Length: 391
Ligand code: SF4
Image 1 (cartoon, helix red, strand yellow):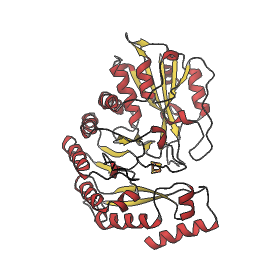
Image 2 (spheres, helix red, strand yellow):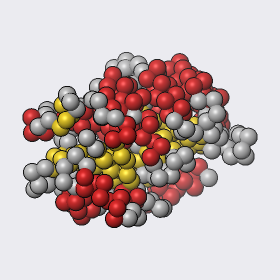
Image 3 (spheres, protein in one colour):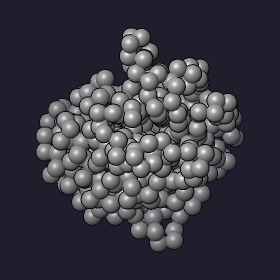
Image 4 (cartoon, rainbow, N blue to C red):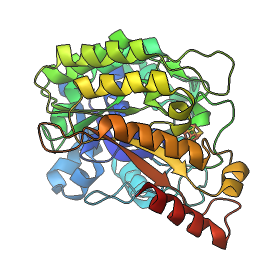
């Protein structure tokens, strides 16, 4: 049985998978297939850019595949330098070209738009051989492979979320797929530490709450995944699939923000360094400035841990979104400007020292969103003044 995985790319508030990044979902799908008895040689991986540039003979492989899995979904308004996410027309074309069963999933299950930030419409496909995974695509793909292995009846497969235990196994079994990426070995492996936002209220624009409460992967599983990827030749890693790295395995004390757990970060980073001693890049993404402002002692320890084990040139993306208090309140945003200022100050104090490659170790990055509810002419001025104040 031949299976093709097509990477139409993903970009979510807490996960990135546009080249040179490869999202964890691709590796989970490949691992789920292997676990169901599909041989590695029968699993082919294509990026949508690779397909656009491919010859007719290569496309014939897609036509012959028994199962074509298409991953897609942009839920934030990203702009990409050298890659373009899959379009709806391309999905329809690929579904017509491939004779076998087609499964489409990933964040696109929440709706399709040509880019994040635009109104999304529900993805409906008229072809009876096309199935949209309404929950986790990796779980759906796993469950439609029946013993044999062969493809079972997708109509009888329950749409469900995967468990952390499953992705622990699938991440390990699916690491081999990175070697088929057209940019390999120059790819950044996006790694998941947890998903689901730990706040008790959520930002108006964000899709992370669809994943439910925070479900943390164990340190052992993430480290084992890094080891598997490293054995396959991965050298570039980013701890990017989580809403806030500073709350990895945080303790929920019933407050609006869980208390960070510095020991968990120490175990995680030291473990990755131990299993991948020759890695070239170990970076992070996503830090909630409110966590840093609320728990400066714990977060200072975590920053020092990051500096000890990561590679310089690291950026903690802080989703500030707006410096206008009215907009912050109207959209349930995570932090007031004073909190963000304190978080930026603390990270600059600890992280701005230069590393061996001449870059600062760890700097705050600030994300702003334009177009939020409640914005007025004053909003831009408040954002600008905030940035001038930092400068
Ligand atoms: S803090 Fe806001 S933007 Fe970040 S994951 Fe939670 S809801 Fe999304």
